[in-house]
Image (cartoon, rainbow, N blue to C red; front, side):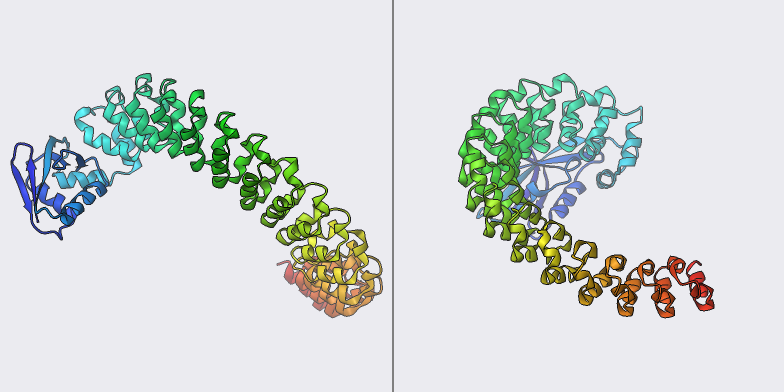
Amino acid sequence: MCLSICSLSGHVYCIINDQTLTISKILYLITLELEPYITFSIFSEDHIFLHNYLKDTDTTKLENYITNIYNSSINNHILYIITDVYYDNKNRTLIEYKDYLTKLDYGKCKEIVRRTDLTIRDKYLIINILNKYGEILLLLNNEFKENIEMVLTAVKSSKFVLKDVSKEFKENKKIVLAAVNSYGEVLEYASEDLKKDREIVLAAVTQNGHALKYASKILTKDKDIVFAAVIKNGCALEYASNELRDDEEIVFAAVNQDSYSLKYASKNLTMNKKIVYAAVNKKGSTLEYASEILKNDETIALAAVSNNGLALRDVSEKLKKDRNIVLAAVKNHSYALRDASKELKGDKEIVLAAINQNSDVFIYASNEFENDRDIVLAVVNTLHGIKLNNISEELRKDKEIVLKAVIRNGDTLQYASEELKKDREIVLAAVNKCGCALKYASEGLKGDKQIVLSAINQNNEAFIYASTELKRDNEIVSAAFSQNK
């Protein structure tokens, strides 16, 4: 394989015979053949632009082209070079200048653009700055702000530029197309005429579906454009025409991309079982936007609560009494118990399924469970346990329940029966968890030195609940004092 690097006039800069050479090495070999202060662009044999040495950091297009050359059956190939002059006030070589441009950071760029001597001869410097920080265009003098190449570079790299360029550039299709290809939402700042341009709007919504918001009214009726928007951002359906919000294909595509787009579907399509199922199966909470008819559909409701138990809030009152649906809901999210029917809040299996995940939901269970030992034991065995004030007086006398409760929440000793407040094992467990639970111990145990020491070691403020005698005990006082250090 032979690759010749030539000028358009036929001058040969170099010939590449080694297929193992990298792109960076090929570019380096070209630079060696150039005169000082000369840079170059590379074109294919068909005169298709491939790469500009000083402007482009990405060499993918050139790499792909050369790879295809290497893999072709033709032996001889040509790449064309078009040269240009670059200006550098530090007189660096082309390679040195390229390296300098590559390493420019934001602080250095802002320092450069404050210079008063900048002119269009510094185009390679400014283009590299704008490639990185397009918004800096707004700090430059009018010679650059009015230059189409500079504006084109800036709008590609920053979404903040198109808003503030001149009216002339907002009406320039090439500029606006480049801008929306990078940041679809900047369609907002295009001229009204270009918001009616199908190519511009399609490019914008393909990049960011929400750009449909800024399209002309007529293009929000264009099915291809709206489809491109909703497959990118489902909730762009909000900006589609009423006709297309009632289009099954469009709405189905939207909810597949983002279930919450069901909110913007026509009333007719919120009754479409296929569409609603697709939405709630991915995001159960979108059941909120379904029709009342489908909120009463068992298949839809079950799919919704299986994905998000809290969707039980939005199912019909009839289905809040459906045992299978409610059980699926509480297994997914314990707080779904809150929205179950009164009857099912008294269903032991359902309540156990909920509290096994989170004991806090015990407050939503039927009051009859305050005296159900199995339920209460299940609650106290969970991570957060239970406050004894939520159970019956009878179970507050149950040592197993109270012991497990105070192990998790010592302060709940206050709700134990008077008899168990005298139980040394229970009180010791309580103060080990919460020192100030000593306040609720029997007077006799407030005089128990081991219990009081344990309480103070957990929280020195428990000292104030110790018996009068122990408040004079040197070891107790020392423990309380050392905790204050």
